[in-house]
Amino acid sequence: MATDLQKSIDSPSSSDTEVAKDTRNVAMKEDAANYTKEENYDNIEYPPPWKWEKFFIGGYNQSRMFKFKKPKKMYTAINLFAGVAIMFYGYDQGVMSQVNLNEDYWNHMGINPITGNQRNTAAEGGIVSVYYGGTLIGALIAGSLADRAGRIKAVVFGSMWALLGAVLQASAQNITWMCCARVIAGVGVGAIDCVIPVWSAEVSSHSARGAFLAIEFFMNIGGLALAYWIEYFAYLNPNMSMAWRTPLALQIIFIIVIGVGINFFPESPRWLMKVGREQEARHVLQATRDSDVEYELKGIKNVVKFELETSTANHYWAMLFPKDKYARQLRWRVVLAVWLQIMQELVGIGVITVYAVDLFQDAGFGLQLSKLLAGFNNLSYMFSVIFAVITLDRYGRRATMVWGAVGMALILLIAGILDKFAQTKGPNQRAYGAGVATMTFLYTATFGATWLTTPWLYPTEIFPLNVRAKGGAWSVVGWSIGNGIITMITPFLFQAISYGTLLLLFGLNIFCLPFVILMYPETAGRSLEQMDTFFENGGSWNVFKSSRNMRDAGIEDWRWTKKMKEDDFEELEHGRKMSTAARSPEEDEKDARQSWKKRPAYTFKRKASNAGLL
Image (cartoon, rainbow, N blue to C red; front, top):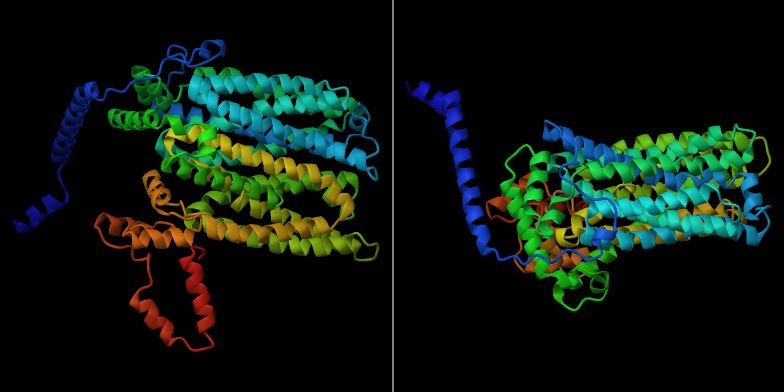
């Protein structure tokens, strides 16, 4: 009897389960009803529609939106569409890699010959780098436009600029024409690249975002590889003018798909709520969520209310030059996002992807073989991105970046030394060249598994929802600055110091390590509320000092050099200090037992663990 009773307690019957579900549903409906009654007391004063919004074409229309029977199909479609947009960004970034090698292009631009002519070398790098000036401008415009007119209209705005830029690039007749076209295209790509990640994050279900991370970056590098291989086969055309104009013109296909297709998808429910279109926000959530939407709608409404109350801080100028404590916290986040993107370029990926053919030629390979090696390197780069999802979740953001930079530094050091000998005639020249190629493949794979994703993921984790669009814009600003500088100076570096370029990149990887270790808090496993707690109470740009300040203030989650684990969450829920937050007596006793030979290694391991690196 007792046994049967115990079994019935441990394994409730299906009828009991149904009763529990019915009870829970009734409670949810009652809470929703109470929430509806409480709405009248919120007194949210929604701002009037932006007076210029009607002049921007496109936008959300409920009757035009795609209809799917299951919400899962809707957010799958959203993520795939966002992946196409990110693929276009990769395509546009890599399309100049072989255009720069076309002699007909040199003649039209007036930069022939490249080698040995400083003016022409500067012009080659300048044509590539002015694009990033456009992306910087486009990101800043779109970040503001997305908040005023909506995410969809901002994407359409960017698509129009990108379309004009693509047409002008494909028809360019001189260097002035090409530079103007590159800037215009950059404005469009910067706008799209700024808004699409924010839009997809706000529209997609929370459960789909991990999958989207993998899709996003896989398709991003897939776009870069696609551009390269299209150019490779275009060069088989004896018409050298068409060989460089065709890949530039094919951008138009991506742009039309993005600019037209976005209008058939739902608008961000947070933006709809912000402008007082609550019923439409509810409809979007019902189309993209399997669960009851009233709770999420209430959360969005609370965020919108806070955003309207702090609207003075939701401006680029206020985020850079704060007048209150909240705005100062935003400036701290801006610095982290911008500098992380700049460091991503300093570690050298732009040099390898854009000027890979030059690198392989310097290592002693012929032009055609160098092109093939660069193409296969892009494919290897694309598949290495799959490992990023594993490294980011398992080891955290800090450890992924630190060990990634260490690995890339060692690879570049070896590659630089091998490249020195590969450029010297001799019986072993070919072997040294093969070594350089191997190290190049290893470098791009390491970057794809570590540094590619984090600078784009980090801003979505540190910026509050009320400034997420502008936070994304600041991230693109940092990316534009880093790319612009690197692509401008790389042609000079290859001609001036040759193999020394790789050794310089080795030094830059080492240069970035202290910034990552000292400045960047670990965001893995932490909620947005926990991030707000860090920036409100840290009080220092040094993450170790911030952790001590939070410990002294009695905040339980204070070890911000380490990722949160499941055990940590359980202890926080029970109101206990985190077991990983401080040195325990057992650790001190273990230290004392170490022999003098083992103690240095053990101490290093412990300190690295406390810093979140092991």
